[in-house]
Length: 457
Image (tube, rainbow, N blue to C red; front, side, top):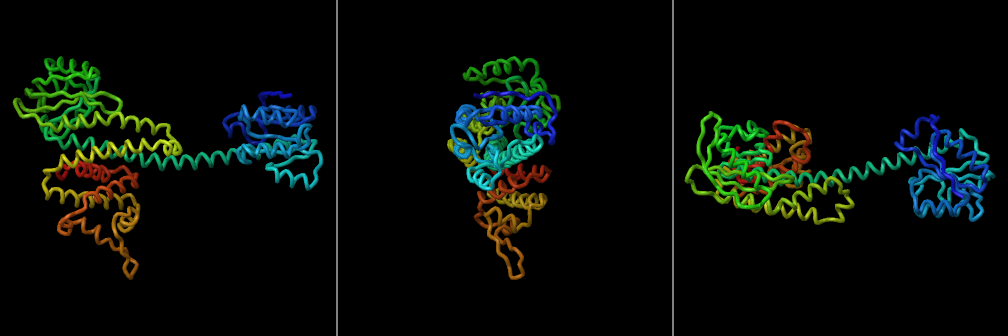
């Protein structure tokens, strides 16, 4: 026989266990004596707990097989079908002592009974007849221990997930930086507009052409850049974004920051980035030769957009265990990253040698400044913790970072500097440092230039 009763409205005496656990604790009581079941269940119900009673151990085990929503078991040692020790041992095959506490009930308080209770996996035991206050105190204690164990387990899992997510999210941030840096490296003027006609992004060449900065136009309506006669063609392009068809180039007027208007040749592209379609406009002087770089970037971004979106969305619900079971997510990140690195290498193929050297020195100085500014340790700690630079300790115990120091001055920079090592050092410091400051912004900007092969900022 199984009977389940729910709590009456009554204040719990020993602190508020109900509020501590967030839900009403569910107690399972097993005893072949109906009078004992009635007394225990009614007392616990009056204290705000939910109670389900069983007249034998087999019914309890069957219930837990189908519905494992229980917080504690009160289990009589003497049962008609089998003794409580056997039932407790079977419970421990599925639940450990922290997951489902068991308090044994016995009418004889012999020492061997207590030893047997411990040996079979019980958490505690009570002598019958049970005093109400003692019963409640034992139950509350075990519920609190169970809650503390669950909180500790969840915290540990959360820490593992944070570490994994932090690294994965950092990989995504690096990909985004490279995407932004690529458009800045394009010599032609580039402007991105959302489906709703909102200005999203422009590169440095567009800023130089029009006199507007990205901060001045970002989030604004396209009317500030395009006169009324030009807006009709823009609306046609925006309406045709989802059709994936060819967007015909044309000439149209553009409003500059000094309020003058100028005709330009404009080539439109459909750019699929994250969760939206963007209209990317490449603006060039009338009759100028088209550059293939913007089209190449759009093609690469669109090709990898689905991978990038899938990985980002997965971060919202993937636990460390699921991430381990689905290594293809990390593979997708690496595939995108590899494609972007190949493109950045192509973009800076003709870069000035002296500018690269100056940029490397600039980045390394910004790295050291930001590391020290975040109080992450000394320059020797940076070299040691990153694992990228050799550290020597002299006889006086001082760290010497000779190799790293050579990258801090243009005169001492090696003839063939290790650019990848500088990039990895900057990425390491940005990952470790969480302080949002002007120094971090300068470092991120310099690193983007290094990614894309732009000239010294």
